[in-house]
Image 1 (cartoon, rainbow, N blue to C red):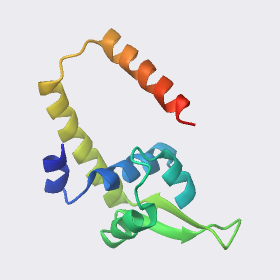
Image 2: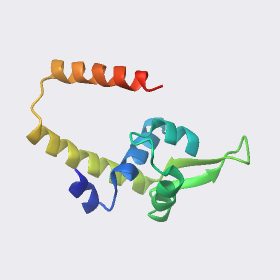
Image 3: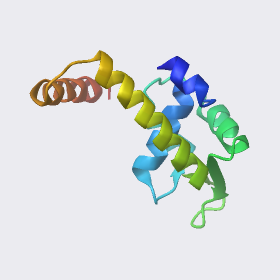
Image 4: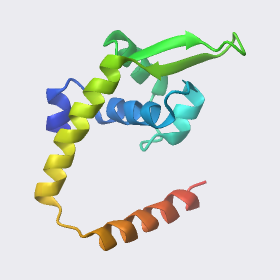
Length: 119
């Protein structure tokens, strides 16, 4: 997976931020909310976002309700690269991981239990 993301010029953490923003779209998100949803909790989210802004995959604006807060959204390029990456990653998983729908559902339920216990 790392190799595929690298082909798109992304790291795991950057890909994760893009997915988080897409999941919240069209709503905007602040850094704190993005950090709370990160898979890797030790990630430096502001630095990751800075790099995504430089790549023009994420747009940073001021929160209209609170000028002290900065919020992020995906750009069209961000949606596009996320879609391309996700398709490629899904192809790889389909070739390497053989799991039926019932097993996938059970795995998802177990992962949710682990996530809930981390809070």
